[in-house]
Image 1 (cartoon, helix red, strand yellow):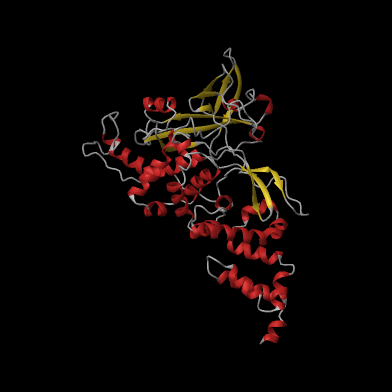
Image 2 (cartoon, one colour):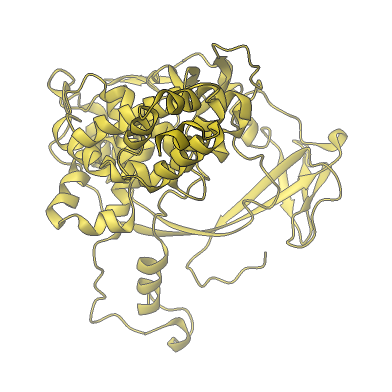
Length: 470
């Protein structure tokens, strides 16, 4: 038997190893692979010499590969072995759940990048959930989020580790994980996240000045200040982290307030709704004219449809900066590795619905003028928001609205007016003279050329059943 084993072709050894990995324990598939490589010298040589393609095959069986295509197949093959070791080391840290582990921040980065690189098969997500990432992130919030807050006037510190933990809590969330939480656990997480959600003067979602257009060249310049310091506060600088194997990339630290808001709202939405017994009529058709207040159908629609959607992989973009790449390899790496999908006209046109919470004005002014964090953040419940967006485009670069440097380019120039008609939007200058027209996007009628500029108009609808033409 041993003689036959020694005479096997190296490719046969590799297939045996690959099938073993596919059949092995979900938490440690490389353990059996190592055992096979130690059977004899022939097996060791077959599995270690020119083994890059084999490790790539093993990696693709265990983790998602498609999002890594920007690196190039050759680069992924070369670094697959190192990346396998790195990911399993990180998963081991996550499974142990030791919040004092010196490698915890690195493990958080590995998990964060794995979520970004998840494909439709969701192998990465399954590995992370099996390692207990959601439970660890929840525990971190309870035991570590407010570490150091005693020297920060009671406010949680938006540092690298806290930001990653809050992001991972959301990215690993699903209806199943929320249903496993008790009412008390949901309320506790909500209380912990409140400052990050409501105190925009400390934790803004967008920390770039309105006059900055080139985000890559951005340097922090506050536009105002309060007792809490400059606004917007300086964001955390991008981190140079290992992206794949030995490939390093510069990645922005996740926005703690953005991910906190998602986790906060989704827990508010799971609260069972109660329809007041006195509420009538059943729906708007039962009313004579305009109803005075919401109907039962309005309440039902709000709770059943105006909710937060969980992360949908692989369609998230968590802030990789593609221009800063270091690859210790003779292989060339494309200058642009991963970019979010290009904007397409028609993406935003349609009816949108959701919910919002606006804190009480007096309470917010108190928070803004008081250095210490309040014991509670008084705010009403969720309210529905229904709006309609419409895109208008132009293909001729010679007839566009004048461009303005900075993000203020998102608005029409000062003094300009517009008139929205059936199929076009007319733009008028400061003197009221017509300047140009943009075509209104319609489903089934794509632009006839390359779009060079877009104007987006919108209006808030009165209710979910408000009729409008798109």
